[in-house]
Structure formats: C-alpha cells, structure tokens
Length: 116
Image (cartoon, rainbow, N blue to C red):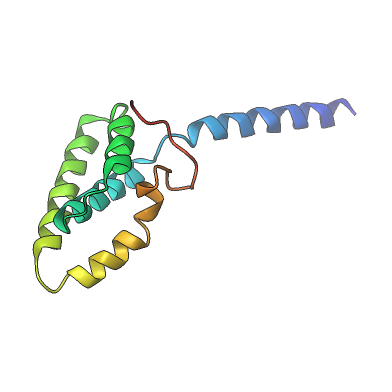
C-alpha cells in the first residue's frame, strides 16, 4: 500500500510542476509568436495588443540570442508580408497557427500572464 501512495504523491508533484512550467512558452513558440507579430505588422493589422503583451511578458526570461533571433524573425516576416504574392498564404498563417498567440494564450491554449 505504501508504494502506491508514494507513486501517487510523486505523480501529483510532477503534474503541479508541469502546470507551472507550461505558462512559459518554449523558445520555438516565442520565435513563432514574433513571426506572427511581423506578419500582422506587414499586413497592417491594427489589433496586436495581446500579441505585443505576450511577447513582452515572455521576453523577460529569454536569453540574448533568443531575443535577437526573435527580432530577426519579426523583421523577416514583416518584409515577407510586404511582398506581393505572399499575402494569401500569410493571411492563412495569421488566421490559423498565429491565433493561439494572438488570443493572449500560449501555444497550448493556456492563458499566459501579461504585463499591465
């Protein structure tokens, strides 16, 4: 009986740790969110406040190389959105995968803390 209790206690601690860690986007998701902001800016979207807040909050804990790569992704996506022939594909990306970031939620659909 005792081993079962120990296993259950360990599993509950692991689940609690995973829940708190999931509030932080992975570096890859952070870069994808920067791309989404670049697309939105390149397509002249005006409602990017939730995406800006997400990136600001998530950027606080990033290493310098990831922050620089995020700025590169943002610029590259913005330039791509300004080109003709890319708008349909980028609109689909903005209305598809980017919606997870633009709604103020992280990649897993969980609400992330935002700066006020």
